[in-house]
Amino acid sequence: MKAAFFYGPNKIKIKNINIDNASNDSLTLKVLSCSVCSYDVRTYRNGSFKVKPPIVLGHEICAETTNEFKGKNFKVKSQERVSIYPVIPCLHCWHCNQKKYNLCSNLKEIGSTVNGGYAEYISIPRTLFEIGGIVPVLDNVTNEEASLIEPLACCINGINQIKSIDFDSIVILGDGPIGLMQLMMLKRNFPSTQVMVVGKINHRLEMARKLGADKVYDVNNNSNFEPISNLFLELKDKQAPNLIIVSNNNANSLGVACKLANKNGKIIIFSGLNNPKGESQDIKEIPSIDANFIHYNQISVMGSFSSNPENLRMAMELVNSGEIKIKNLITNAFELYRLEDAIKNSESFQGLKSIINKF
Ligand SMILES: [Zn+2]
Ligand SMILES: [Zn+2]
Image (tube, rainbow, N blue to C red):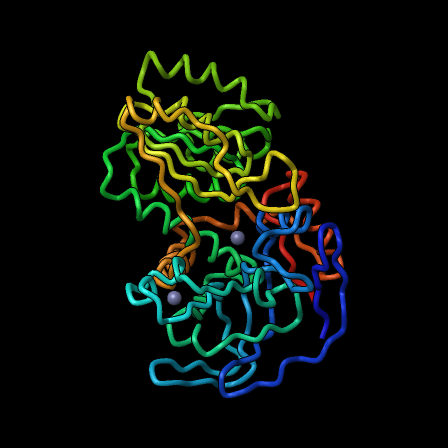
């Protein structure tokens, strides 16, 4: 089978390798579609502290079972379409006992620490079936949409964390696919709440408007978000946001979020941030933020990472019912041999989601 191996920054090679033989402990699935995440872009360019090459990246996966596979609490038929939860938990740690698999102390990640979806076939361990991490694709959902179930599930996980918070004004810092998914979810769950999107790409901000953003702000490609100070001044007179979601990987975003937040405001860091020093590691230190501002204004800074299987099931239902029109975000499709082009497309903000759907 063909698989795209990541060998280190800026190096991906398609190789022909043997398909993993089916065993009692895993099932081989045929990949139907795998979408490019900004994590893949960052890893391709800079490497990641998590990734030890050579490895097949890709964790937003729709695949088809190649055999029947069953266990105590699961059964899949052959040739069933599924979306895959990309976290392989240990099932022994405290977080796994709470069924918070995304927080597992010993987690392995598909497309990061074990081979992922940029390949013709993928081997999925029994554990993932046992925890409900293999989610059947419903009839109205295309293969391409099914590979976006995983990032949508991450947005649902993020939004679940704010359910008990009072807010009436939200700013999303980021106009990429994740920011737009969050926008759709927020508008669905809190229709009367004002949601503003801050971004730098015209066609993406246009899409944000189309998807229901009450206001969009263009920071004009300025990496320090300088034009956003106008937004700050404007909002100060009215209602500054009490919830800010950082949905882009600019390391300055957290500082910007602190400047914008209303008193008692909450900030969710949804994206992994780029290292401003340009080192070949993910960022290790939080860029300096004003601790006194956080203290005197009673600001909370929260994180949101990955998702849990029930979030994928909900995401699948929302796409199947048409409540979340994820199709709007799928703009570029590539064959596997053009994976680097797909990554570069995402990196240069061409369209929204780039997807590999031919292998
Ligand atoms: Zn992703
Ligand atoms: Zn665990």
